[in-house]
Image 1 (cartoon, rainbow, N blue to C red):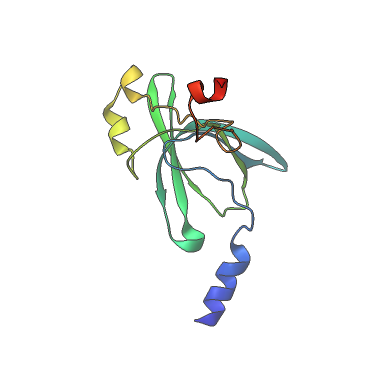
Image 2 (tube, rainbow, N blue to C red):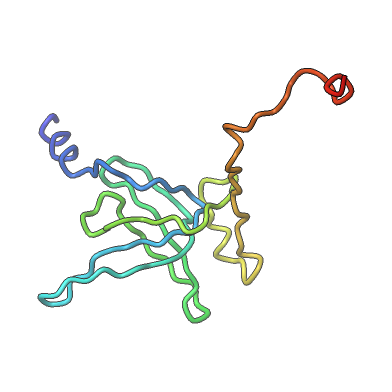
Length: 134
């Protein structure tokens, strides 16, 4: 059993890109054509993530020429160069399979808006405007 865990540990990536279900992402992955190797970009919406250590996968859906295309990527694959988040999404589900039946604007996901100055902003907690004028 320890040998299996050792093999899994060496195959796992140490640096993982931070993304979640609902995010629009660009997946940069290597394609080997004969002797040449190039990086191709697949851009779409992450609709599912399946967790199982080395076998962790995520499904990306995009619309290509009016037809929905889904592709499953293994997260720890050496063929994946990087996963770039284009637009963070705000969803309340773990799997977005319902997107398959949606068409056009109905298939849109709300964008997660992160306030830039929320951590270091100074907000006065005591006193009122009348007390400040005196």
